[in-house]
Image (cartoon, rainbow, N blue to C red; front, side, top):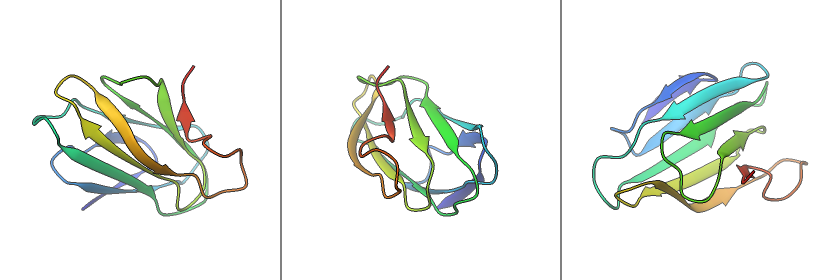
Length: 102
């Protein structure tokens, strides 16, 4: 497990990253996976801001928005892109607002 504070690169070498939301308009990135079937879970563990995560290669979405503590996304590397295989959008915002498909 690793921790990232609101902005920067999210590790692909650990299965779980705790994302600290420290200010508004944070941004994180996720490099391409290394093994087909690789699983990555990102959990926002503080609620003092927001962060947008943009994987290098995505399957069917633009980015993931972490706004509230508990917002979670689980991704799988298909060998070509990161696919969203699960998420939890726990805040008062619109259901499924964590996935930005635009």
